[in-house]
Length: 258
Image (cartoon, rainbow, N blue to C red; front, side):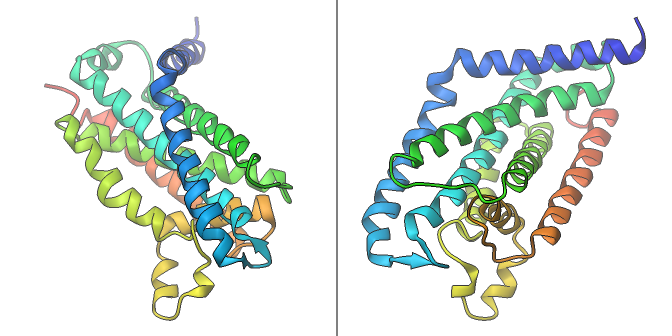
């Protein structure tokens, strides 16, 4: 068997194991985020949204949906890989993968695929739930698909890096609490940054989640607070940089070898 074929087998094995794990404990991985987002729809979309009216010509409920979907994808992609890979570190099974005849890219790709799969599954469920509250017509399907894939991949890679550096399970929760959640709420999920004055608009444009949310919103509704081409370039750049960084950490065995 060639080296490439062996690595593809390793990649498929890791990815399949991750996906099977997600499905086996679906009551923990898929249902809780959907319930949480449903509450967001009821409280923000219906109760508060009825008082807000429209944003950019769309009912507030419709405007809210793309941000909710992207928020779900980001959080679940991150949490899946950070908890799973840290669990492998904790059980010392990651050391077996490092000495096995498989490339570092196969390990990273397998875990990222599983995380992206969970993010997309939750995102799809959140989108289905949204149809009970409002109607949607996807304006640019390809842009929507590319943006959601890039967003999930970025935070899967970020979760992988966090799991490498984490020394205890509490370290995994620090980033979602103090980084992802604030950036998400300030990333245009609930409002258009055009509603902000300066310097807050300029500050908001330094938030990477703003580009993810608005690119997906453009794919679904056809509107965006940022230039879509620029946003896609920013997201691709994040994927490349984080991938190179994560592979470098794996190669050096940072936080993985005793």
